[in-house]
Image (cartoon, rainbow over all chains, first blue to last red; front, side):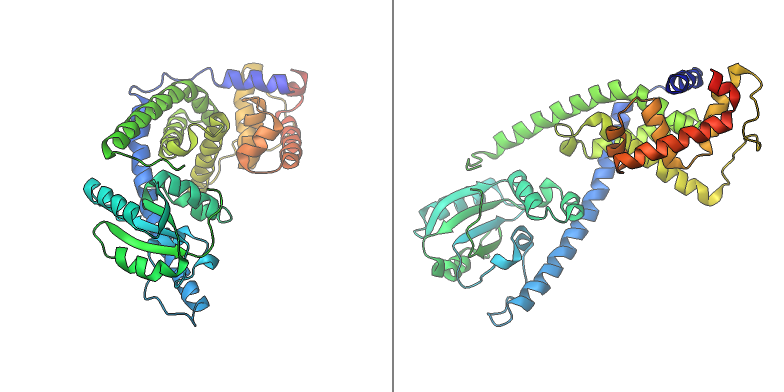
Length: 191
Length: 183
């Protein structure tokens, strides 16, 4: 029966017309880019929704602590339980999407010169994306809806003194090219 | 993971090079995969124009995710999954406005007149099966994929593929009649 089926399918395909002219790869690329752009918009919406939900959840959980008016996009990058606004050893400075090379370089030398900063490193969008996928591995739909270029670049570092975090954050927040500063008390694994 | 990207220009350059390589791979994949995708699509829909459209849509969807899949995914199986989903979607949309035409002898087992026409009858008989069963038959018996690969493509378990495949073949045998069994 199996052999018969294959033969019959083969016969059924014998009237195959000549493929239409044009380069299918080029057409697919144009159409594919359009699909990707549409998905990107959807993902941005989904990410905004999740960040909003996370902000509500965090503010509720941390009610006794000093309230924070708004949570930045970078919050989606961290496990919620690890947020501690007053003390933090692991700190990320998220960069604005429109940061210039000069601003980034200036920020790097500033951080390198800062006495409380230890183990400074730069996280690219792609590295952020990999980590994001791991963090949200249990919600694959959300994880797969976010593209590498929708996550911010960041400088990652350890603070020598966790209690120095509020002052540190105040120094860098609002600086040109900085989107936000986020701190966590839990050491990040895998680095 | 600790390296610091030193210059924006270098980063951009390597990104462009990466993209060019990716597009090249995609073009090669399209050249290799298109004929088979189109034929598989045809067996599912019996319409070469529609088969062409579904194939083109499959390629576009694959390009949209190409950065994620080109080095990791089993492209062969992945492309079949995208294609079958396109077929299923198309069928769902169509079923709203159109009645499925099962232009088949309503008496199963009626002998088919000419052997030359048997393949036509086969495709018509195939069209009367549930769409997922059609996909299983085509992937298993035209594309020669293993039970496990078919299960992966359709996102069902291997035992589902086995039982539905058996049921589908029995039904085809019944619809095609004695001539088929003798082939």
